[in-house]
Length: 480
Figure 1 (cartoon, rainbow, N blue to C red):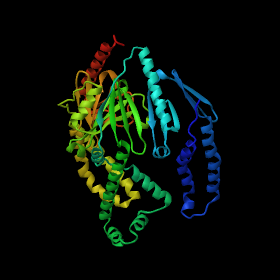
Figure 2 (figure 1 turned 180 degrees about the horizontal axis):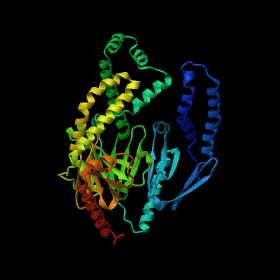
Figure 3 (figure 1 turned 45 degrees about the vertical axis):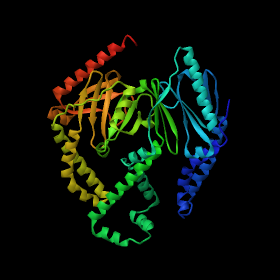
């Protein structure tokens, strides 16, 4: 049995320091320490540090030709025996701090598991590589015993630094903005205080102009938020997909990427439930797309979705998709009912008005945005109708939808879990219906739905999908 590296204690202490920093934040701002804060800090020191030490002492692991053994637990002792033939991938993950200390985290993924089955954090990089190589050797020996021939790994896609920077320019994220405003609320800072601190009091004339023209202040605030969101999107994208590479080995895909945390993933073809092509209006204008795989048995942190190609031309997307399934993307799309535009316009009018009225209680300048609702709602409804459609082939159902986040789903009939016709109260008045398709590993939001079909068309489409589903399973029955 082997132990973790002693520097694991330092890494875990640093990882737990943000919680201590939040407790001491009022003190760092010059406020006196009250009794409640002092008690929380003492409890943190008396509980967190001993738990980190106890976890290090109790954690052990060993690798044999038959299984990987992991023992852990402070109050409850746990021993996991992971058979070698069940291990699908050994992932080596290195955060920035771990890389500075020469350490790595080892994650063990098994067949059919909904999450990481085992984790060894942290060991030396050489030890992590030894574990991965020995597991691969033992799996090859097992494959030789079961007459499984070795496979050659082929590079399918690699992302250059220039392509990475170009792809980041098409991203947008408000995650960091929410964090900034939450921090300002916690620190009791107003936007005016923040601006004074940044410009050092040299732009008072700008504040005076904004005070006299609320519409100008609203426009400037929205433009600043858009700029910050664009910069945050670039940073997040570069950090996540730096040095992105995709390989194929037999019936598996291997991915590796990351700037601060280098992560490796394996995607068996049999766990892929759907392929999704994603883009947005700006990316599509310049001819760029992304390819995702919806997986079964992947943890909730990814919501069942794994990025296969972050940024590529349509030809590359189709070539890599063909390495998973022999799929030909449709050239023509069936449209839904034009009544969708009227339903969507009413929904956007009501939702936009309620949202802006509610926002106006917090930010009075938001009332100026109400003038754009009567114009924006019909435009958004028309765009949504124009980008929505479906197509049927012998093996796949294709669904496309979305305006700012345009997606095309490729759904194999043999992997469908549930398909049904659904009618809301308002749709029944318009004699419309939705066709819902549920696949294994689907995220909570953004699932494929063919919306606002005429009732008769929706029923016919349901019967056609069900017939192809039965045919697919009958063809697979002898091999199963």
